[in-house]
Amino acid sequence: DGGITQSPKYLFRKEGQNVTLSCEQNLNHDAMYWYRQDPGQGLRLIYYSQIVNDFQKGDIAEGYSVSREKKESFPLTVTSAQKNPTAFYLCASSLSLFEKLFFGSGTQLSVL
Amino acid sequence: KNEVEQSPQNLTAQEGEFITINCSYSVGISALHWLQQHPGGGIVSLFMLSSGKKKHGRLIATINIQEKHSSLHITASHPRDSAVYICAVSNTGNQFYFGTGTSLTVIP
Image (cartoon, rainbow over all chains, first blue to last red; front, side, top):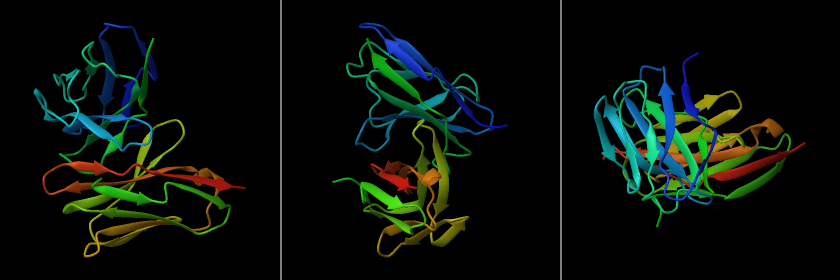
């Protein structure tokens, strides 16, 4: 079945540590996105990518980094510069930029 | 002010009731999306519409472009409909704006 796979489902970060969240899709979608969800707030865009080897900052990119070396994969690294990383992170993809979104099941990141 | 406003924030209904969730937006849009988020966290796209009305099973989505307003209706609600429903718009500047969601609980 086609879909988006995020891993891990739960992740804990220590102070000063970088952590990487995985996102893989087999939908043959060109566009991929990372969103952050905090309680009581709408989804906020961290980064998005329209094609391989290209990505753009979203509204809250500071403290995060991404890569898009393969069409299927769009990993997100939460760096030590992100001082408030505790949130639910959602990866999404669409056939082309800002068309109908398909979401992964999310990763809950917490700080130890 | 948020670009997308939803009401109500929370909604409790008895099984079988007709439910309406409202969404208003303030930006020019290319499409409006209704999303469903279950307690496990994953999100499913229910509808994407730019005019008129769409129906899928017991779910109906309508949009009024002139009034910048959309509604999501659930007929004959069921406990399995309990979820957070999120309205989002994609605009002509190639951005998505998301509402904060409506938390629906359907009681048996």
